[in-house]
Length: 420
Ligand code: AMP
Ligand code: GLY
Image (cartoon, rainbow, N blue to C red):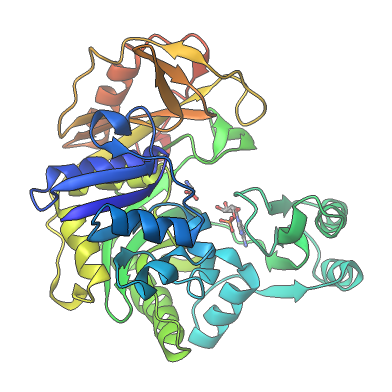
């Protein structure tokens, strides 16, 4: 099979790594890719949000299967364009991708499905939104309806904060994403993510993870795209996972199919768990980054077979072969992230690190120049390890990090604390 992966982050490096373990992969191209991906696959410059360009590229390169990593091409309908051209794709249609691209859409589908989630109101003008806040009080959660790169959610501990967030959103702080606002009940509990493959009809859970969104140790400081993750998430016991599948995932997937927009790809269910009951926080229509890195290290080559089965509608016969293992990934970021940071600093010491089925450094924001690896993003490396226990995996990851020479980078030393 000739395979094309769209994307350029640590998630796509991990997907590429897993795909390359599988002998069914004859040729792999990742567009646009990064310096780490270029060490294991061909990389190609391509505007991945331009459906016409992606279809032409896939046809010219005799691609059999396209795996779409990030949400932006999905929300732009690239999967639809590829399918219309007769290509096999892993990733939902533009219509189904609204489960991530529109929070009010998701809330309404959950209502129709009877899926447990936070109570909410949906507003297109600031005054009505503020009246809702005054009526329901704080704490509350104010969300820009559209895609805001993970930044459009404000947890407001007071009414004043909520009202300021409403003014910001309707004032254009999140561009078009904030033209509509969802205000939700604040849910308490412990968060975990469940990853489920869906083929339009059947579903298959492929693992759980927890990430660390805050930049600082002890889960403090501003939110980031994720500073580390581990899998499995101990809070998602088999019983709670089964509840999440029966009460949340399956009913919402049924509603999507009934409405003529069957979901195909990976569904990332962000859950809040309290007193043994999961409730949906959000759906994403792609793998999490960095959660994908730990899932791929655990799944290995079978990840390709599973994604292929989802794309071909064969999940009813598919199963996951789990080792009883744990994986962790620690993000190395450029100093200053998630604010401004320097680009082009050199990272040394990567060549000496082990690369095997228990130790992998996935690249997120790197480029290679004159034989050097340079940091060019905020989140730069994902040092990922696997072990029989989380502690063993964690020790391996931090041992690798200690060999990396990058004075302009930083990382959290406490990834996995909640589970340990
Ligand atoms: P989202 O982009 O919807 O995942 O929101 C980002 C983060 O905000 C989540 O991962 C939660 O930590 C938090 N969050 C979102 N909605 C709620 C809610 N209704 N109650 C409590 N926390 C929430
Ligand atoms: N790590 C969170 C996300 O990918 O949305």
